[in-house]
Length: 147
Length: 141
Figure (cartoon, chains in turn blue, orange):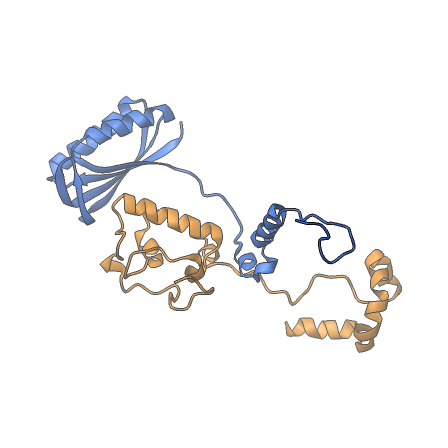
């Protein structure tokens, strides 16, 4: 079961209602056969812009994150279920992935264009795309026949 | 560095560096070890000791992975006037990190953690990582 992260934005409401809304979503995950790994409260604050959701304009919200494991086939059902909940303004499910190790390529990118690998590749492609020019092989510097 | 230059000066004579290098190059390239044993005055085949370390971008240097919950960091890559994400010619990041930053900012904006048309007022006076007035490369604006 892959790990996912559910980023929730809940509407402004008193604490007991907030708790029940979070419990509802958590139980929804558990009912679908998932495991909850972590609950994270990111606080209540003013939203960066007003958001119209379920016919109401929201200006404040509570950010809440739930890290969970579940089958990938259940994700669509969960999203649909959360979409119907009027206490939830935004819901996004992200896959938790380990960042891939790589080496910084800045020193290569700072080279002059002619030395950069991607530019060299582009020049190669441009060369390949050029139409072949017909060589008359007549030794004359003009075309002897009517065109 | 000083020590290195001193030791180099001891091992190479001036005539060797100037004249004999071109003559002996092909010989030195074919049998390096044997040549070194035969004539100690010959240049040794070694990597450039004066080569600088490859330049790294600021996120790679400190080993930071941009993540959408780290709004304070991400807002530093955003214009305070329009909220647009600064390009690579301004931020000075490597290709991969710039992509990661852009993805993280977009994700944060969708989750309502970050504004899209301005910079969060809380982070307006944060220290500047780069100067948008002086991009490393010319650009179309």
